[in-house]
Image 1: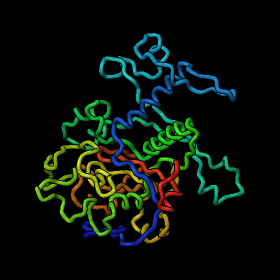
Image 2 (image 1 turned 60 degrees about the horizontal axis):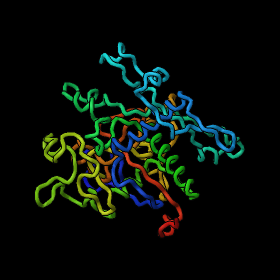
Image 3 (image 1 turned 60 degrees about the vertical axis):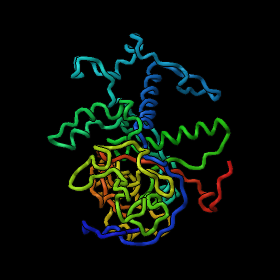
Image 4 (image 1 turned 90 degrees about the horizontal axis):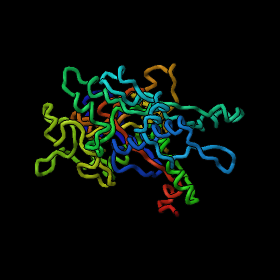
Length: 366
């Protein structure tokens, strides 16, 4: 790991060093609007089913939401029952009733194993953490982050319009990405349990070490996922979606973002590891963290809350985006963003670890 070229910012935060990490699977593309919309639709329907009382009795005496029941959203009686989920027409600003996306919260629990191991005499329930984040993307980022720019059309359409289905989801903060990973894990476990199959791991955000290994695609000394040192091919075509020349955003074929499957994959089959949108990682950002971490599965991370100092809420983002210059496309370049903020140029992708095949270099038995 570490800088493959000159550190033009002078941060000296990416010294060259060697680490070992356990093998993992990674999404071939960034999470798209269509994929993330499955998550928001699931949460919306879950809340609606709960309000409507759509439950089924389980053999153990408990009750679960019955997702097989269909919700007729156009039924006036159903709309009356779900009135708490809507903004009244006189308050919407558009003269018509609309769904209140701030009501979309995904509740889940996690267990802080690391803290529990350090304090073995404590009750384990002490380390069970509740999470309840709002999960709808902040579509206003297209306007709030670009002053004196006419971005209303993309702000109004980017997430919900089917024409943007294959575009990367943006406007999601770190907590929302974690919630998506947890939902995806539960979905995965449910399907495997139906077939009586074991679930070894969970979906999560990659550490910055995992991200850099994946982005390099086996090219240890190369500055970019495709190799380098150039950012154009022999035909003069740009190899990623970024801000080339002196701000000619459209020169690479995309004014803003482009579909997640555009541009050639690296040697690991991963697309857009440079450009399009920067990507959240699970790693906390400290300038000198490379000099303080272990060389086996290193990762600097910790839990935060509302009282955590702001500098401790910095998370590493990698890969550069459609509005970044060439330097940020390098696989070794580190940047950060605060975990509770969302941007029009930051998305994410998930990883999944299966320890046995990762250690033995053998395909898992299924």
